[in-house]
Image (cartoon, rainbow, N blue to C red; front, side):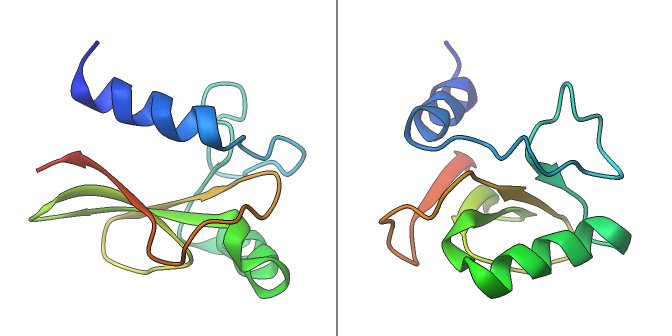
Length: 99
C-alpha cells in the first residue's frame, strides 16, 4: 500500500464523507464528498461551514505537499470535503499526502 493510500485510508477510517449533499461539479459516484472552490459547490461548502465548521475539510496542494486540513481554507489549488458529522477533532488536524 502506497503512503498516500495509507493516509487516505486512515482519514476514511476516522471520518465518513457526506453523501446526502451532492456536488454540482464532481462525479458523485466516484468522488463522494468532494466539492469545488466555485459556484454552487462553494456556496454549499460555505453553508455547511457556517453551521457546522468541523464538517468541512480542505485539501490543499502547495510547494510543501498535499494536505487535508480541517476547516475552510483557501488557496489556488483546493478541493473541499464535507464529512457526515462534526467530530471532536482539533482545528489544526491535518493529513499530509506528499512532502
